Image (cartoon, rainbow, N blue to C red; front, side, top):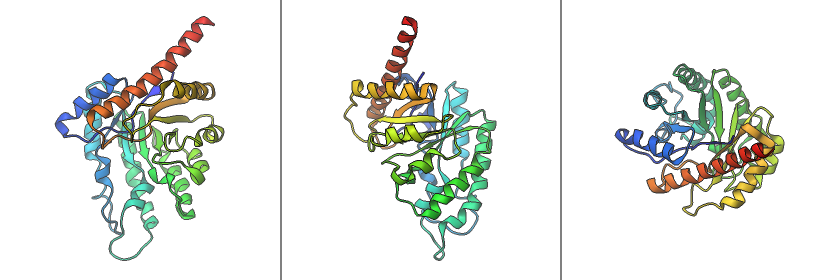
Length: 279
């Protein structure tokens, strides 16, 4: 069965977040993003060599997880990945290599992941959009080191990439020691076949097939053909999603995109069940 999930929803006031979770659930999303409209606030305006604890404060995320779970939702907390966090921050207080901060950053992420696990979270989404960039070799090396440390936390991790293809980082992303990977097949449909060939046999693959940047609906029949092919290769490891998060979309458009994802997943699952009964 293909799972329908969403990478992120429009940013809202705290008082309305339960309504937005329900809107996604009503649209047919199985696994709801939580904290997704908060992580942009965690991208630092500047980076220093000082303590990072005050910059990375995930208390709102923990609160939202507890709130959503209390309401009965299946949730997937969303964090900005440590390498994307550093890449996007600007240095302050002298010229230094931002990667020098990674060793101080990783214990904070490890603590956060362990706390989420203690709250009963099964899956967490870690956004690493810079994997669609042409990265220097030292940053590529840092990915393997970072995720070998983060894999110790006792919950499943989905690394999300979007806004382009992985290109020279495809092998790196496919082999990160995590439980799942999301790829953007709207911006970069050509990476589909190569990713299927390179993905380890234990790993979930989330296919971003609904355009999160365009109001036009996807071609459901053509997309279903691709999903059927993917299911033959992946089976239960297939997830379906928009190509990217939807934080800046109007609410009605974001709901429409979630509905498209759910329609695709349901159509695939229904056809699989019908085939199983016929057999």
